[in-house]
Image 1 (tube, rainbow, N blue to C red):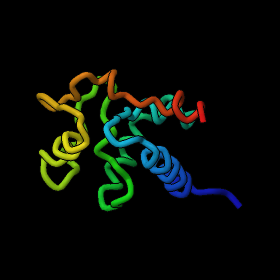
Image 2 (cartoon, helix red, strand yellow):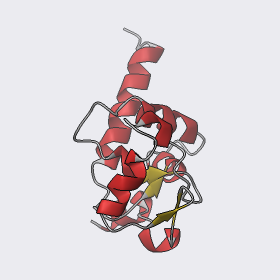
Image 3 (cartoon, rainbow, N blue to C red):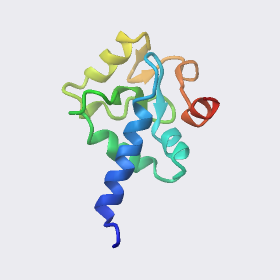
Image 4 (cartoon, helix red, strand yellow):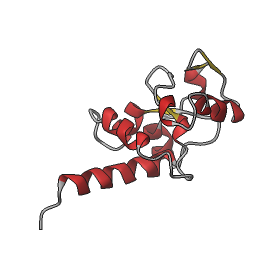
Length: 117
């Protein structure tokens, strides 16, 4: 029995959600960092699609995933355009001009953090 492309995509999305659930409060990661951790370096866009599809899932903190320089590129997929920033700021992550302030300080790299455990 072969696995369809849609089943593969669904499995990939679930893997993304598992990683995102592990991002600690007050920290952020990037689409690319998740893709690298999952062994699919060139699939950061697919990670973005997974994030866009999860906003009804209360247990997936999608607001903690930003682009590689800390921009809130997924903000348009939240209830309001300010919601992503509000959620981050409620966790102590400063945001100015739609970008995480001190991005490196808040950056959580799953490849490093999850391989330490």
